[in-house]
Amino acid sequence: MRLPTDEDLIRWQQQLELSLAIWADTHLRQATDRIGDPAVHDAAAVYVTRPSKRLLGMAFLYTAHVLDHQDDIRDGDLIAIAAALEIRHGAILLHDDIVDGDTIRGGQPTAHHALIPGFGDEARSAALFAGDILAGLAPLPILRTGLPAPTRARLAELLQHTTALVAAGQTEQLHLDSRQDPGSVTEADILRIHAGQFAPYLLCSLHLAGALAGLDDAALDHITEAGIPLCQGFQVQNDLAGFRELARVQARGEQADSALTLANTSDLARRRRTVLVRGALDRLPSDARDRMLAYLNGGEDDLTAIVDLVEHSKAADYCADLIQALQAQSRERITTDSRLPINVRTGLHAAFRYMTALYDPTSPQSRLYLRARPDLAAAA
Image (cartoon, rainbow, N blue to C red; front, side, top):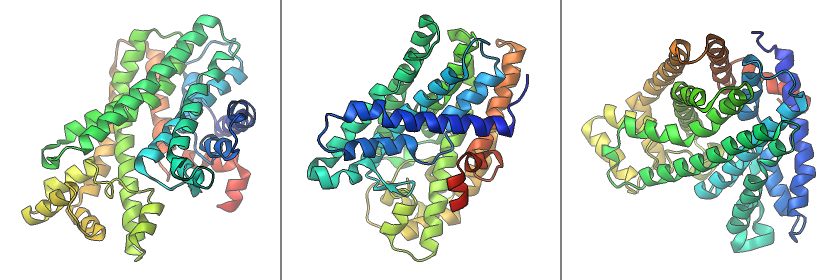
């Protein structure tokens, strides 16, 4: 097994970026051409062309490489599959922004916010349909590859099944956040939600690579079992990063609305039941815990004061340790799973490490996308 070099990763990302830009200007434009307002195309396109590390697409390309995909698969077909993953991800993010009410993502207006000038009160509905367009088009790059018809069908089925799983997981998260007894929500409850919320679409990258390597459905199930803790750790890491950004902005004395915008509306501001919140509840003295529970149940309170409660609880330190433990658990599971061939275990172990590095903003691998995008490197 030869691990991809930095030059390989940079080249793949450049090819993926180009593929997405061309797709947005051709297939997406064709699908939105009948709409009277061209802003709909632009609002949807930004979700697949904005600067990104391309976690899903790059995880697929890396894993397909280390699992020794079939030799007769063209590089262009692999890039097309990676593009399908990123397009589907764009649809999920667009719908997430509508649900969360975010107005800014990555420094640019979210779709439902960008469409206000043309649609007024119907902007959210128009954005919802724009997300549906992305989701509906996502499998097409796979179906238009030169792969054998049965392979194309299997890959498209895996992609679409994952889309349904993610939607169900997001709905389950909303149900958890609606519970009026946040004190009874356990860490196990939250991690179970993460296993069906973030994990399916990241594991789909591994499943598609595994399918190209000839793995059957049982083997893909083993990959899921091993990879879920890794994905749970990523979700906790994402929640923690949002909280730390919120705390950083508020520490500078900025207004709450500005802080929420920069933090992409922190989960704490949405009163979501996260591992961080659960960790704080477990560590706060009773009076502070009661105040936190009242806030989670919709009570009025100063968000800055709630942030301070979480800070003083040291729950962030607990979450950082938990992330490391979950990542190690996945690596241990994949290494010791004798139901998978040794070469598959070795390849997936390498893929897990790569995904961990790509998700870590301090790692050299996570910054390779700047070398793939000279315009971003110059701005940075």
